[in-house]
Image (cartoon, rainbow, N blue to C red):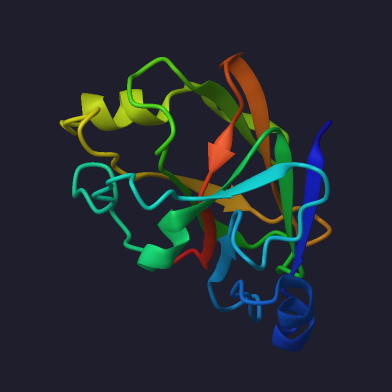
Length: 183
């Protein structure tokens, strides 16, 4: 079963109503989705908060370029899910930043999945821990966050869609999504 989450950004009031504590605002401002956090309005799927006994060092210059609020790393959504970021300017360019941190698994190859953006595969066989280790992280001792950035264009309806797709091993998982107008 695929969960579908719609983030409306036409007005800050509408977004606040739908997202609770998740941040969203006018299309000219960044849109921030706390996947699995208190504002994540997914139906079905599962959300998770980092257990207190799990260590993490989420800011690692080789895997995270654009820092986010540390609270965003402490929640996640897992299972196949879809996010629709709406209310954007049709045809406008944006930078999509996806943030991942796996504090459940400890070794590369234990969670491998795909990510589609606007119907196009942008990550195939993506391994959060494998990506961090390849960049020099010292897993399994500490979990490190991974950021993946993509240039995207809002479709004719003013929407950018992110689909997390089950891959070869385990379920997909994400911590945060940030959409920033292109510079």
